[in-house]
Picture (tube, rainbow, N blue to C red):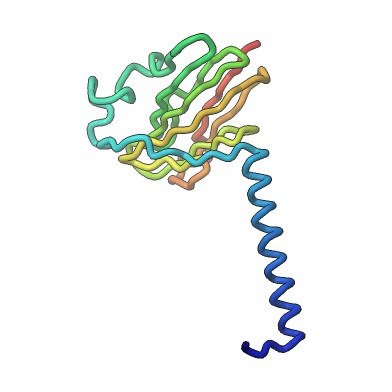
Length: 162
Ligand code: CUA
C-alpha cells in the first residue's frame, strides 16, 4: 500500500467528485437539450456539385425542399460565398425537417437560431441534422464560421407558417 498524505487524499477525493459532477451535468444537458451530432451523410465532389444530375444540390433552388410525407420534409442547402441556396424555406408548423448541407467552396457554418441545429459545412461532405418546428415564426439561419469579407451577410430564413 503506497502512502498518500491525508491532505493530498482530500484533494484526490474532491477532484474525483468534481469529475463525476461534471460528467453528470454534461449527460443531463445533452439529453434535456436533445443534442445531436451532425452526421457526415455522404461525400460529394464540390467541383461538380452544381452539375445537373450529379446531386440533389444541382436541382433548381425552389425544388430543393421536398415533402416526404405529411409534416415531413427534407431540404438540400448549398452554402457558398456568401449565400445559402435556398435562402428562404417555408414549412407548416409542427413539421419535421432534415437539413442536408454542403459547401461548394470554403468551410462555412450552419446554425438556426433558437434550435440546436449547428454544424460545420465542409466542401466535399454533406452534413445532416433534423429538427421539428412547432412554434410558427421566422428562424434565421446563419453562417457561423468566418468565410471571408461577406461572412456577415451570409444568412437565410426558415419561415414556419401557422
Ligand atoms: Cu459562410 Cu461565414
